[in-house]
Amino acid sequence: MKWIHVWGLIPFIGMLGGLPFANKPTPYVLGMPFLLFWIVLWVVLTSVVMAIINCIDPANQKGDHP
Image 1 (cartoon, one colour):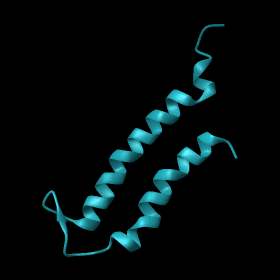
Image 2 (image 1 turned 180 degrees about the vertical axis):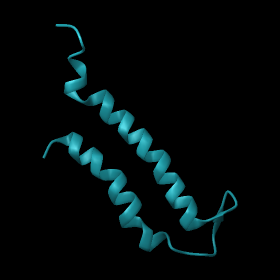
Image 3 (image 1 turned 30 degrees about the vertical axis):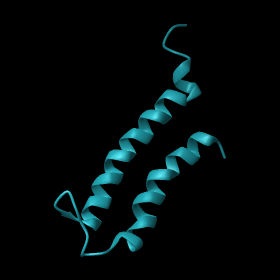
Image 4 (image 1 turned 180 degrees about the horizontal axis):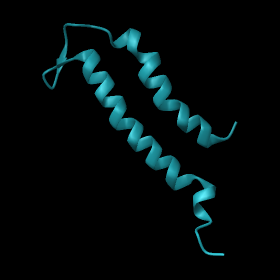
């Protein structure tokens, strides 16, 4: 498996794998229950991870020039 595919799995594991551990009603972060904060955090982190993948992907390094 290529490292780019591993980077693509990080948001999946973080969002779905972490939900059972983040499902706690008592701590509030930024005024949100922790579960909602966890989901919003991973939505933002998914964008960051996808930007990193876009930068390190060798297919994007070729460019549009012949």
